[in-house]
Image (tube, rainbow, N blue to C red):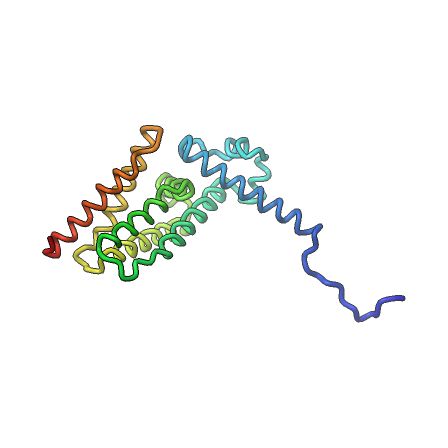
Length: 210
């Protein structure tokens, strides 16, 4: 029996075509992961295309295929880091929480975001390149700054308290820097208590509360 001339064969992805695509996606993800690890372990300067390729077990040609060049690879890390940051910050729900509970929720969320290896690598790339990656990197900085400011408004929507988010973020940067210099984890719970107490005291004093 022959098929009719008007019959149409399915054109969706088959197992044969989807397998290479998945391998390609896995390779791309592995290269990004190794770039993140390289930057957090060895610093931005070590993340040359050659060194990342060696760490990921691929050739320079593979990096070119997926990212075009080193700047494209760095931008992919920034994309992932900022997306992760924005997703986490947008998910914070303080609801009807009291002041101290709001501060705790914001500090914990900000720490998870900032201490994430991908976010650390993304911010290090943005700091080191200072806009040389093009308009997209500048847009990411604006997005991150807007998200951080929004995070502060979750603690207090009083314009007089607009600097709270910057204080929290600066404190977390200092903690992460100390951790990198020491080469080991800091006592986050102790640092967390001090930061929460400091922010709570500042806001309560400003509002005339005991």
